[in-house]
Image (tube, rainbow, N blue to C red; front, side):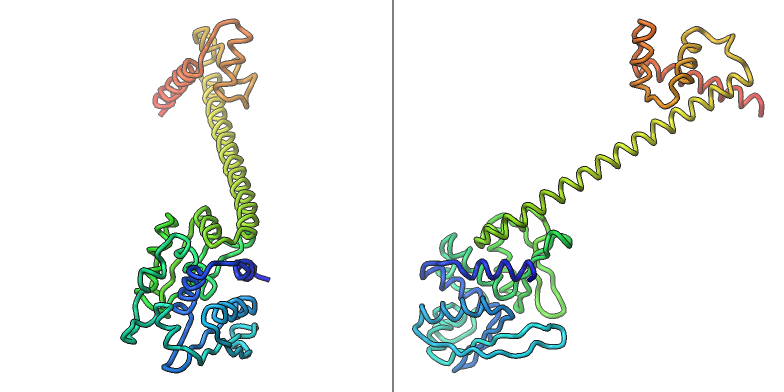
Length: 311
């Protein structure tokens, strides 16, 4: 069972008051319905969703819907469930704000459908039941989308989502418009919004695990990069020291320079911080990383001058 299916089955069991049920049906029908003067057809791959839609229509409008099972197309092995309504269609289409009182199609629903925060949540729940999908955080990148046929409806849904600070976007696709959310935290917030609380627990557990794993990997990579940098710096310092000893010797150098040469050769893998601490401890004379770096820089400058003279 996919993560999306699990979510839809969970939210299909929610008990809601009449105004929220109307908002949910409106979101579902406007996103997924086709209609004529006498019929309304709705379709879904999820039997639990179909049962919910059937129950909501029966409870709200005292009608009995017909349900027909069809084989999926070549791209889907799942059955398709067609919900057919041939009673009170005009009343339903107007009540759910699909049609105006004059019988004209409404590009966006009237304000009473989403008047309260709870009704907005219910409307978005209906849209998700109709056209929503979420990637399983365990197996893929974070992504939630709802494919909407009409441009105005897509941007209306985006505006509702962004009232809850979900940072949704709209993308024009070849067939319709994709309203989507990419941010992991915002997807979790959406699942809370539509009351998919069990899905939230699963989603957040995986998200926290992945974030922790990614952070660990970044820290490991950072640590490895620091180690590589330390080794690279120490190697260059040792090369300079070797060149100096072969071409000049160390007898003519001052005591401070001789000291850092001795300790670098003694501790070839130590960082400058570690080396400064070792020298300070063993000699009883405090030297900072900056002071140590200054001495190595003087060695480097001396080696460069010698190489220039050789050339």
